[in-house]
Image (cartoon, rainbow, N blue to C red; front, side):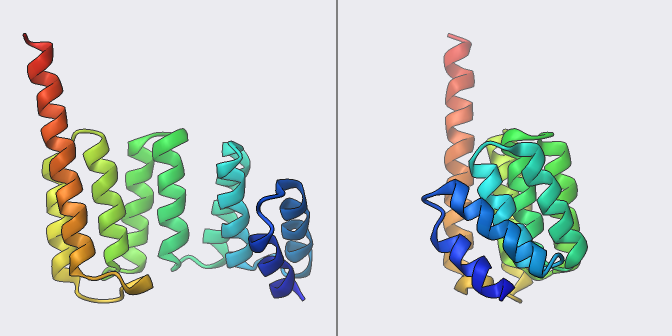
Length: 168
């Protein structure tokens, strides 16, 4: 029953109030359903409810500490609208420790570093991703790592151009 309500909530995200109600019912049926908790957290984050999203991500992570996807999503929230890159790094590191060969952890972390001007750190993370060659959710391949590598380089070039323009 909880799985059905969880799927219904994911499908009906166009109507946030209905989706929230479905997630609440799913979690009444299965309070430690990490997937429902993570999806609900994602919806709350998209609605701008950072504290609610953070609480749901924590509950999801507590329910399944080895789920790297939840930790990456939580890290993305913290970097973008929460406690910043320092907290995001802690969560990326925890995700890496739970799945040392998950290349998606490395690519997400690398992009966060690049957005904050740390191209060197981002490139080191991507080097680690190419060596991981392990679990690859969603079919992530070396091409995706290399695509992220290109994005990191683009961020670095743009940052350098802004710096050059500021000195003129």
